[in-house]
Image (cartoon, rainbow, N blue to C red; front, side, top):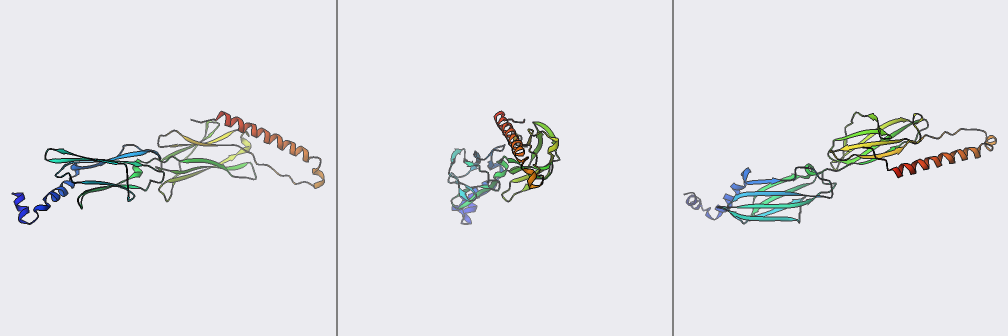
Length: 268
Protein backbone atom coordinates (compact mmCIF):
# COMPACT_ATOMS: atom_id res chain seq x y z
CA UNK A 1 0.00 0.00 0.00
CA UNK A 2 2.82 2.40 0.86
CA UNK A 3 4.41 1.84 -2.56
CA UNK A 4 1.08 2.57 -4.31
CA UNK A 5 0.78 5.77 -2.25
CA UNK A 6 4.23 7.04 -3.30
CA UNK A 7 3.54 6.18 -6.96
CA UNK A 8 0.26 8.08 -6.80
CA UNK A 9 2.24 11.14 -5.74
CA UNK A 10 4.61 10.64 -8.65
CA UNK A 11 7.54 9.87 -6.28
CA UNK A 12 7.87 6.19 -7.10
CA UNK A 13 11.37 6.50 -8.65
CA UNK A 14 12.60 8.43 -5.59
CA UNK A 15 11.39 5.84 -3.11
CA UNK A 16 14.82 4.16 -2.54
CA UNK A 17 16.47 7.54 -2.03
CA UNK A 18 13.85 8.70 0.44
CA UNK A 19 14.07 5.47 2.40
CA UNK A 20 17.83 5.87 2.52
CA UNK A 21 17.49 9.40 3.82
CA UNK A 22 15.17 8.25 6.58
CA UNK A 23 17.49 5.39 7.48
CA UNK A 24 20.39 7.84 7.62
CA UNK A 25 18.60 9.87 10.27
CA UNK A 26 18.46 6.99 12.69
CA UNK A 27 21.17 7.24 15.29
CA UNK A 28 21.47 3.48 15.65
CA UNK A 29 21.98 3.00 11.88
CA UNK A 30 24.99 5.39 11.61
CA UNK A 31 27.93 5.27 13.93
CA UNK A 32 31.24 7.14 13.80
CA UNK A 33 34.03 6.37 16.25
CA UNK A 34 37.72 6.89 16.89
CA UNK A 35 40.35 5.66 19.37
CA UNK A 36 39.79 5.88 23.11
CA UNK A 37 43.17 7.37 23.96
CA UNK A 38 45.44 10.18 22.86
CA UNK A 39 48.41 9.85 20.53
CA UNK A 40 51.50 11.94 19.87
CA UNK A 41 52.23 13.75 16.60
CA UNK A 42 53.76 11.51 13.97
CA UNK A 43 51.32 8.66 14.51
CA UNK A 44 48.14 7.83 12.59
CA UNK A 45 44.75 7.11 14.11
CA UNK A 46 41.86 5.15 12.61
CA UNK A 47 38.37 6.62 12.33
CA UNK A 48 35.58 4.23 11.47
CA UNK A 49 32.07 4.69 10.10
CA UNK A 50 29.49 1.89 10.23
CA UNK A 51 25.90 1.79 9.03
CA UNK A 52 23.27 -0.91 8.82
CA UNK A 53 19.91 -1.52 7.17
CA UNK A 54 20.58 0.70 4.17
CA UNK A 55 18.12 -0.12 1.37
CA UNK A 56 20.76 0.30 -1.39
CA UNK A 57 24.44 -0.35 -1.92
CA UNK A 58 24.87 2.72 -4.12
CA UNK A 59 26.49 4.85 -1.45
CA UNK A 60 29.76 6.79 -1.36
CA UNK A 61 31.72 7.57 1.82
CA UNK A 62 34.02 10.59 1.69
CA UNK A 63 36.59 11.57 4.33
CA UNK A 64 37.96 15.12 4.47
CA UNK A 65 40.56 16.57 6.81
CA UNK A 66 40.32 20.36 6.90
CA UNK A 67 38.44 20.17 3.59
CA UNK A 68 41.18 18.10 1.95
CA UNK A 69 40.57 14.53 0.83
CA UNK A 70 42.25 11.76 2.80
CA UNK A 71 43.90 9.06 0.72
CA UNK A 72 44.15 6.05 3.02
CA UNK A 73 40.47 5.04 3.11
CA UNK A 74 38.71 1.70 2.76
CA UNK A 75 34.98 1.12 2.30
CA UNK A 76 33.12 -2.21 2.30
CA UNK A 77 29.43 -2.72 1.48
CA UNK A 78 27.95 -6.11 2.39
CA UNK A 79 24.46 -7.52 1.88
CA UNK A 80 22.57 -8.30 5.08
CA UNK A 81 18.99 -9.58 4.80
CA UNK A 82 16.88 -6.94 3.07
CA UNK A 83 19.50 -4.21 3.42
CA UNK A 84 23.19 -3.45 3.27
CA UNK A 85 25.83 -2.85 5.91
CA UNK A 86 28.49 -0.23 5.17
CA UNK A 87 31.86 -0.05 6.88
CA UNK A 88 34.39 2.63 6.03
CA UNK A 89 37.65 3.46 7.78
CA UNK A 90 40.37 6.03 7.30
CA UNK A 91 43.90 6.53 8.64
CA UNK A 92 44.46 10.11 9.79
CA UNK A 93 48.07 11.24 10.34
CA UNK A 94 48.40 13.44 13.41
CA UNK A 95 50.59 16.53 13.42
CA UNK A 96 51.51 18.92 16.21
CA UNK A 97 49.40 21.68 14.65
CA UNK A 98 46.25 19.51 14.43
CA UNK A 99 44.77 20.79 17.69
CA UNK A 100 42.25 22.88 15.76
CA UNK A 101 41.88 20.40 12.89
CA UNK A 102 38.81 18.32 12.11
CA UNK A 103 37.75 15.39 9.94
CA UNK A 104 34.46 15.28 8.04
CA UNK A 105 32.73 12.00 7.24
CA UNK A 106 30.06 12.32 4.55
CA UNK A 107 27.87 9.52 3.20
CA UNK A 108 25.99 10.11 -0.06
CA UNK A 109 23.50 8.26 -2.21
CA UNK A 110 23.98 9.80 -5.66
CA UNK A 111 23.70 13.53 -4.88
CA UNK A 112 21.78 13.13 -1.62
CA UNK A 113 23.72 13.43 1.66
CA UNK A 114 22.30 10.81 4.04
CA UNK A 115 24.83 11.20 6.85
CA UNK A 116 27.43 13.81 7.77
CA UNK A 117 29.43 14.40 10.91
CA UNK A 118 32.54 16.34 11.93
CA UNK A 119 35.09 14.99 14.41
CA UNK A 120 37.63 17.32 16.01
CA UNK A 121 41.13 15.86 16.34
CA UNK A 122 42.03 17.56 19.62
CA UNK A 123 40.32 14.73 21.54
CA UNK A 124 42.81 12.23 20.09
CA UNK A 125 45.96 14.40 20.15
CA UNK A 126 48.63 14.75 22.81
CA UNK A 127 51.39 17.28 22.11
CA UNK A 128 54.26 16.97 24.63
CA UNK A 129 55.81 20.23 25.83
CA UNK A 130 59.20 21.59 24.87
CA UNK A 131 61.00 22.41 28.14
CA UNK A 132 64.00 24.67 28.66
CA UNK A 133 65.50 26.63 31.55
CA UNK A 134 67.02 30.10 31.32
CA UNK A 135 68.88 32.20 33.88
CA UNK A 136 68.80 35.98 33.96
CA UNK A 137 71.92 38.01 34.66
CA UNK A 138 72.08 39.79 37.98
CA UNK A 139 74.31 42.25 39.83
CA UNK A 140 73.89 40.47 43.15
CA UNK A 141 73.67 36.92 44.44
CA UNK A 142 69.97 36.80 43.52
CA UNK A 143 69.18 35.48 40.05
CA UNK A 144 65.91 34.62 38.36
CA UNK A 145 65.63 31.18 36.81
CA UNK A 146 62.74 30.61 34.41
CA UNK A 147 61.28 27.29 33.29
CA UNK A 148 59.74 27.62 29.82
CA UNK A 149 57.09 24.97 29.11
CA UNK A 150 56.07 25.55 25.52
CA UNK A 151 53.43 24.38 22.99
CA UNK A 152 51.73 21.49 24.76
CA UNK A 153 48.23 20.02 24.67
CA UNK A 154 46.05 19.34 26.58
CA UNK A 155 46.59 22.00 29.21
CA UNK A 156 47.14 19.88 32.32
CA UNK A 157 50.81 19.89 33.44
CA UNK A 158 52.56 19.54 36.79
CA UNK A 159 55.86 21.36 37.33
CA UNK A 160 58.43 20.73 40.09
CA UNK A 161 61.79 22.39 40.81
CA UNK A 162 64.58 20.00 41.85
CA UNK A 163 68.08 20.62 43.18
CA UNK A 164 70.40 17.67 42.57
CA UNK A 165 67.29 15.52 41.95
CA UNK A 166 65.71 16.48 45.28
CA UNK A 167 62.54 18.53 45.50
CA UNK A 168 63.55 22.15 45.96
CA UNK A 169 60.14 23.75 46.14
CA UNK A 170 56.58 22.60 45.55
CA UNK A 171 54.77 25.10 43.40
CA UNK A 172 51.25 26.36 43.26
CA UNK A 173 50.53 25.38 39.69
CA UNK A 174 49.78 28.49 37.59
CA UNK A 175 47.29 28.60 34.72
CA UNK A 176 48.83 28.00 31.27
CA UNK A 177 48.35 30.57 28.52
CA UNK A 178 46.41 29.53 25.40
CA UNK A 179 48.20 30.10 22.09
CA UNK A 180 46.57 30.95 18.76
CA UNK A 181 47.17 27.42 17.45
CA UNK A 182 45.26 25.91 20.39
CA UNK A 183 48.35 24.78 22.32
CA UNK A 184 49.39 26.06 25.74
CA UNK A 185 52.49 27.78 27.13
CA UNK A 186 53.63 28.18 30.71
CA UNK A 187 56.51 30.14 32.24
CA UNK A 188 57.46 29.63 35.89
CA UNK A 189 59.95 31.96 37.57
CA UNK A 190 62.05 31.02 40.57
CA UNK A 191 64.29 33.42 42.53
CA UNK A 192 67.56 31.76 43.58
CA UNK A 193 70.12 33.01 46.09
CA UNK A 194 73.30 31.64 44.54
CA UNK A 195 75.38 32.54 47.60
CA UNK A 196 73.42 29.84 49.46
CA UNK A 197 74.11 27.18 46.82
CA UNK A 198 77.20 25.23 45.79
CA UNK A 199 78.61 26.25 42.41
CA UNK A 200 78.26 22.68 41.12
CA UNK A 201 74.61 22.22 42.06
CA UNK A 202 72.13 21.48 39.30
CA UNK A 203 68.66 23.06 39.20
CA UNK A 204 66.12 21.01 37.25
CA UNK A 205 62.66 21.87 36.02
CA UNK A 206 60.62 18.65 35.89
CA UNK A 207 57.39 18.68 33.87
CA UNK A 208 54.77 15.92 34.00
CA UNK A 209 52.17 15.90 31.24
CA UNK A 210 49.31 13.49 30.53
CA UNK A 211 50.72 10.62 32.64
CA UNK A 212 53.72 10.42 30.30
CA UNK A 213 57.39 10.09 31.37
CA UNK A 214 58.59 13.41 32.80
CA UNK A 215 60.29 15.94 30.55
CA UNK A 216 62.98 18.05 32.16
CA UNK A 217 65.63 20.66 31.58
CA UNK A 218 68.51 21.61 33.87
CA UNK A 219 70.96 24.40 34.54
CA UNK A 220 74.10 24.60 36.71
CA UNK A 221 74.15 27.34 39.31
CA UNK A 222 76.48 30.16 38.39
CA UNK A 223 77.38 33.06 40.65
CA UNK A 224 77.60 36.60 39.27
CA UNK A 225 81.02 38.19 38.96
CA UNK A 226 81.83 41.36 40.84
CA UNK A 227 83.87 44.19 39.37
CA UNK A 228 85.88 46.31 41.80
CA UNK A 229 87.03 49.74 40.71
CA UNK A 230 90.58 50.65 41.67
CA UNK A 231 93.25 53.08 40.54
CA UNK A 232 94.96 52.09 37.33
CA UNK A 233 98.39 52.10 38.97
CA UNK A 234 97.37 49.62 41.66
CA UNK A 235 95.97 47.04 39.20
CA UNK A 236 99.27 46.03 37.66
CA UNK A 237 100.39 43.94 40.64
CA UNK A 238 97.01 42.20 41.06
CA UNK A 239 95.88 41.81 37.46
CA UNK A 240 97.77 38.58 36.86
CA UNK A 241 96.37 37.11 40.09
CA UNK A 242 92.81 37.96 39.04
CA UNK A 243 93.33 36.38 35.64
CA UNK A 244 94.79 33.24 37.21
CA UNK A 245 91.89 32.93 39.68
CA UNK A 246 89.37 33.45 36.87
CA UNK A 247 91.12 30.77 34.84
CA UNK A 248 90.91 28.31 37.74
CA UNK A 249 87.21 29.04 38.24
CA UNK A 250 86.47 28.56 34.56
CA UNK A 251 88.44 25.32 34.52
CA UNK A 252 86.54 24.03 37.55
CA UNK A 253 83.18 24.89 35.98
CA UNK A 254 84.27 23.13 32.79
CA UNK A 255 85.11 19.98 34.75
CA UNK A 256 81.75 20.12 36.53
CA UNK A 257 79.95 20.55 33.21
CA UNK A 258 81.78 17.61 31.64
CA UNK A 259 81.10 15.41 34.66
CA UNK A 260 77.44 16.41 34.64
CA UNK A 261 77.09 15.63 30.93
CA UNK A 262 78.90 12.32 31.34
CA UNK A 263 76.66 11.23 34.19
CA UNK A 264 73.61 12.27 32.12
CA UNK A 265 71.84 12.87 35.38
CA UNK A 266 68.07 12.26 35.14
CA UNK A 267 65.61 12.95 37.93
CA UNK A 268 62.60 10.65 38.10
